[in-house]
Structures are given as C-alpha cells and as structure tokens.
Length: 104
Image (cartoon, rainbow, N blue to C red):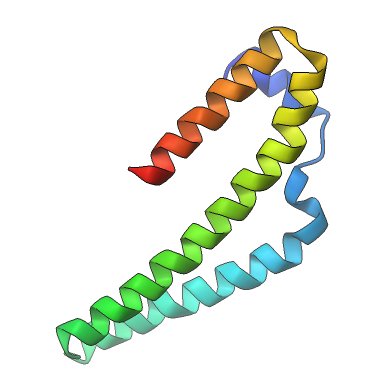
C-alpha cells in the first residue's frame, strides 16, 4: 500500500464494521471445514469426499472475500471517488488488483 493510500485509510473505519460479527461467523465456519478436511485426510477418507469438503471451504472463503470486496467498494472506493484525485485513482487500482487476485 502506498503512503497516500495508507494515509487515507488511517483515519477511516473499515466498511465491514457493520457486519463484522457475520464475517467472523463465516470465517469460523470455514475454519471448521478446513479442520474437517484435515481430519478426513488423517483418517484416509475417500478422495471425492475430501474434495467435496475442500470445495465447501473454498466457497465459504470466497463468500467472505466477496463481502469484504463489496464493503471496500461501497465504503473506501466510493469515499475516495467522491474526494477525487490521486487517492481515488489508487483506491480504484487497489480494488481492481484485488478483483484480479480473486478471479485467478
């Protein structure tokens, strides 16, 4: 994160604050699914059953990522866009890079 972006974020609350508990609940669920995958491998479970659980854990994390991205766009990017200038350009670039990482 550049100095301009870091400085702009320093004084803001994060957009996810309003539903932080929901995100933590989703993360606990994903964590439990990953522990389940670990246990299945230890117990020599059937490959397809393990893959099904891996898929469920992946989807759970993707839902968290999409919720965070939505919050970032609605809160941080929208605020920066309203202010304009270099910070707005950096926030858009940052969001675009995050989306690219998610779809790879």
